[in-house]
Image (cartoon, rainbow, N blue to C red; front, side):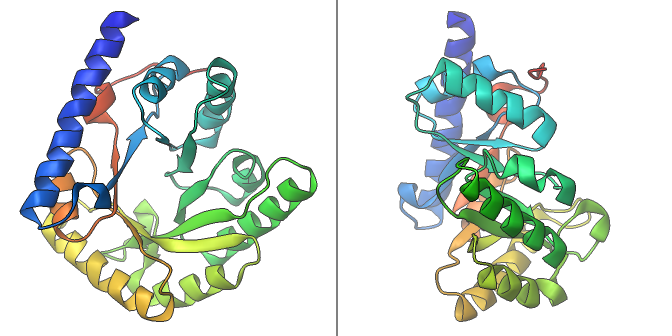
Length: 242
C-alpha cells in the first residue's frame, strides 16, 4: 500500500504543478482551477489514498461502479470530506440511484434527464437520503455530434433555462469534452463563448468543467475552473471495485 501511496502522491503533485503552471501562463491564480480526480475503473482503496492525500473531489462515470465505491469509501474513511461528481453519460433510469450519492452531475444534456434528476432528488430528500439540492452542469457538444453525448450549442440556452427552473437542481455551469475532430484550443474556445452567453442569463452559473490529462493546459487557458484528471494521477488501467 505504501508503494501505491507514493506513486499516487508523486503523480498528484505533478498534476497540481501542471495546473499551477497553466494558471500562471494564463495570468490566473492557482486556486481558480479545481481538480477532480477521476477514479473510474480503479478500486476504492485508491479513492481512500486520494482522500488521505487531501483530494476532496472525486469523479466517476458509471453508477454501477460508483455506488459501491462511494459506500466503501464512506465505511473506510467515515470522516473524509468528499464531493462525488458524476461525469459520464447518465440514463434516466439511474437518476434515483445517483441522487443518493452525487454532489454534482456534470453530464445533463436533455430536459428529460433534468426532470428525472429533479424528481429523484425530491424523493431522496423525502426518504432522508440527502439534505441538499443537486448541483448540475449542462454538458455541451461543441461540435453538435450527439453520438458522444452533450447538448448541441443551439439547444444549450433552453436546456439551461429548464434546469434553472427545477426546484431540486442548481445550475452551476457547463462541461465539455474536446472531440477528436477539433483541436483542444478550438473546442475550448467555443465552450468559453457558450459560457459567456450562459452567464448573461444565469450569473451564478460560473463553473466551466473542461480539460483532462491530455489537454488541461488548453482548457485552463480558455477559462476552465475545473479539470477532470484520471490517467495522469492513477495510471492507464485499473481494477474497479465489484
